[in-house]
Length: 245
Ligand code: SF4
Image 1 (cartoon, protein in one colour):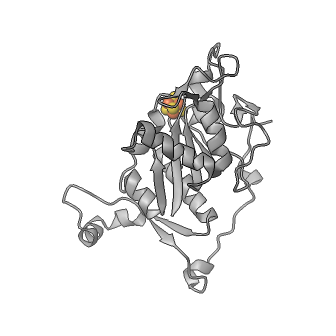
Image 2: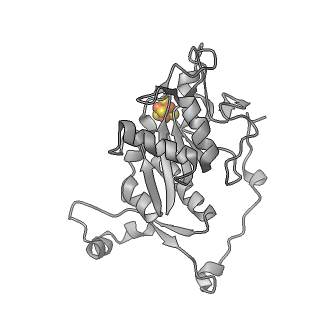
Image 3: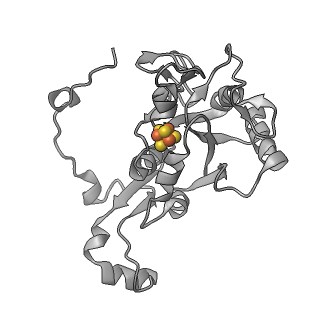
């Protein structure tokens, strides 16, 4: 199983709300199908207080391996770099310190939403809380973790911006990280063309429809379907990125 931990920092919680709007399948079945074990999420998990703190401490200590750290909300560095504007409830410790330690332990770090990626709305205006993103401070590289940060898996922070993020962007990113773990995935939306057949096969009630799903496993390289390759233009032919200088 791939383990995932979710931390909420200086945001509105809207990215979690958006993610919960994922449907057919919903969030938790999607994670299950992708082989992702949710270690803890502040809004979804039963553990609170000392139980939740124990999970975070075990991850930081390396006794509980962590594959994916998801951070939602901007990181509040104020006042004066102490991070005390946002102390993680029940721990007496600034959230930015938790995030630094958890990011150092994680195989991949994902910034969910514009707040966690760039600072977002929390960093707008006079930015009295000195809010920033994980690896960006607005347009400037750096942020909380610094320009040179790379997670243990070798990647910098994976930014899934949007305010809020679309739930499918998040689940698609998690699928790609599952691929990076050596698994193959196959998202299926064609099932929506045969709603009655699929509903009968999976035992859906009359007022439900399976719109999309995902297969997870190891592909058969000898199967003809897996040898098909589409020709594609290089990315700079059809895409121009601006504002990242
Ligand atoms: S990116 Fe938008 S929706 Fe997500 S936490 Fe920030 S303000 Fe809320």
